[in-house]
Length: 81
Image (tube, one colour):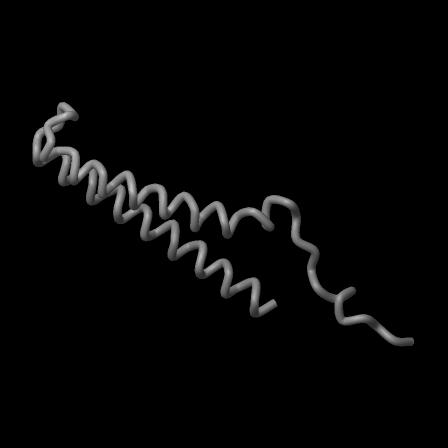
């Protein structure tokens, strides 16, 4: 009786296959939008006060970093399997 090592590995669903690129891509997108909110307030093209623009921009930047961090940790967990 020989067992194949691939038979013992858990199979990933289709959603698990796209979660890592989704986390990384959306994190990058949130960071870009956060930087745009911080930058556009100087042009005055958005009707945001400076305090709201700083708050919204910083929240978007933090959430983007969190999404990228979560994608990286998921990538590390998959390589350990």
